[in-house]
Image (cartoon, rainbow, N blue to C red):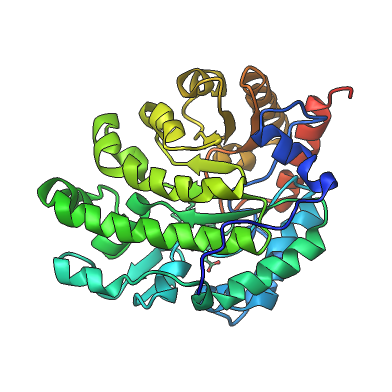
Length: 356
Ligand code: CP3
């Protein structure tokens, strides 16, 4: 199948909304807000539609993907939707044997360790993920002026799951491969970059308005090693998306030392976790990129006055950046009360409202 690098013209009401304007560092009527992991997890209506259906099966059913993506839009009034899927979906689509185990995360049948394992990572074709094209198309119609964010996992984070065989605290085997056999490491990350790039292009071709590349575990690396072993592969994914013109968000956890390098990988917006105040983060990233973040997700388990105080602080810090998209510093915790998320959206909108 041919690679599609463009998308249909974007309606003005969509392109001019606060989320896409903030991505471009333009003035906004209010600070836009959405939450990583807003789809799923904390919502009772999510648990209801998922009853008896495995996580990966639900990602491959366009009707369920559409419904679950829309649930937080209806409930919270957020300024952007994130496509309901998972970073491992494109890996399964090219035939990698793995499952998502509830409460654990992705678990790989046969971990990747040798040259021979590369054969198990063929390129992703749009025809491998018809349910993605179908769901994005349906969503764009339903969402109207609300932008849809497509996403993929970055090569390092995907490689970590493949090499470790599951979640890892130290990423020791991944680093052993990276330091010990850079040739194989680069070949592995090259294939993963191709798969992530293709997965994002499918979503954009079908109508996604922005993309987020998740390198959740990149914070395990020093800046020097990140630049040497990881950044070129992430940069290639982001460069492949450049012809589409959609804004590119790049996010990781524990990345205080990497923020500049992650921006330089080719992001328009850099996601920041709660450890680094947004003003300091923006100073590291530079005036030519916006920031996204960074309320500590655990704050949402506190009483309303504490939540409000932290929301104000994030907004005040974000105000010094050339563009700010309000978000959490990582995903919504499963035990979060959904009403607290709705209240945060209202607070962000009220407190950041600016006259036209
Ligand atoms: O709302 C959204 O953000 C959209 C959907 C989304 C999911 N995963 C759905 C999901 C997104 C953007 C992701 C990205 C993802 N998946 C990342 C990067 C973001 C991050 O949080 O750092 C990573 C590292 C993964 C891998 C993964 N998948 C993990 C660590 C887990 C959690 C395991 C658990 O149960 O705690 C998953 C499973 C997963 N992905 C769930 C959802 C809704 C939970 C599965 C379920 O409901 O049974």
